[in-house]
Image 1 (tube, rainbow, N blue to C red):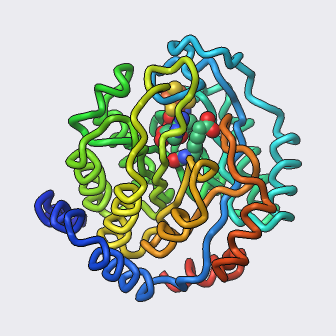
Image 2 (spheres, rainbow, N blue to C red):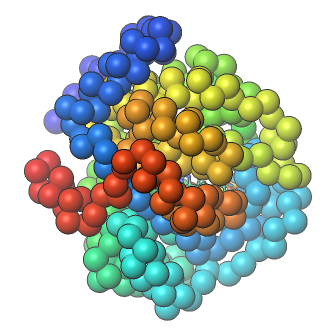
Amino acid sequence: MKNTTPLWSREDAQALYDLPLMDLLFRAQSVHRENFDPNKVQTSKLLSIKTGGCAEDCAYCSQSARNGSKLSASKLIEVQRVLTEARKARDGGATRFCMGAAWREPKDRDMDALVAMVEGVRELGMETCMTLGMLDDNQVVRLRDAGLDYYNHNIDTSERYYSEVITTRTFADRIDTMNRVQEAGIKVCSGGILGMGEEVQDRVDMLVTLANMNPAPDSVPINMLMPQEDTPLADAKPIDPIDFVRVIAVARIMMPTSYVRLSAGRSDMSDELQAMCFFAGANSMFVGETLLTAENPEEDTDAILFAKLGLQAETASEQSCLDAAE
Ligand code: SAM
Ligand code: DTB
Ligand code: SF4
């Protein structure tokens, strides 16, 4: 039976956020070491399987048709193309392949191809993740039966701030899909974006919502807004980097066994900021030169960073050891 008592109150979470930075970092790193190898980072590769023309109005997104963005809408790409990209990603060391579509929700006629993508990527020995928008019960079961490991569905911000960013769906719609996914036995990947003009309270509330899910998401992506031309957030004030590190550290303490992913925005971060994020407990990231539509650091740049910091990419067998120990 699900435990209904919230694990985290806003007050306790806010108190963590407000700690002197050195105390916060020390606590986060201590929690991190109890649960993970501090020198290993899980690596995921993203592929956009359907780009642009999305019916939703997310204010940050280059793919929304409502943002008048110049990005043209593509069709769902061929299964074979997905598998070719997945093989390249695996050979480059990524252990998880994340397929993203610019949809409000998938159409039933797309399900056979999506199932084939999941099955094919699994056969390559990679973990599978999809992010396709809202799902109904039937679609969740089909993806689960195909062997989908993770479903990414971000809550993005607090419930209070949500309607400032997205008006074509509600925070509750988001939580409904996450519950459906979790109840079917697919692991949830959910996090948010910082630097959209939100208050500190919104960042804290977002983490409280995630940490009080039962269980908390297995994977928690923390994105730094990458401002996109022609979107309402094109000129948003950037988040202070130290505040960004604080969110990572609080996420690590509140969700001690989840992978916290340093997600979009690394291409604008210094080595020092990324190092601080890893110290604060981030232990996953996207690799490869593109995210879905935006840029990410080149492989060589990441290799130099890992060498400087003495970090190593987690291998597929280390990943399955952790899964077996759960
Ligand atoms: N359409 C699906 C959905 O919204 O769930 C999947 C794709 S969507 C691009 C996945 C996530 O990427 C969003 O929830 C958001 O958190 C993140 N994202 C999108 N655009 C971003 C940007 N410009 N900067 C940072 N993160 C972004
Ligand atoms: C997530 O939290 N970040 C990824 C993934 N989930 C799907 C997407 C980042 C997208 C960045 C903007 C772009 O590439 O268009
Ligand atoms: Fe569509 Fe997802 Fe972009 Fe929102 S974030 S506009 S749902 S692709």
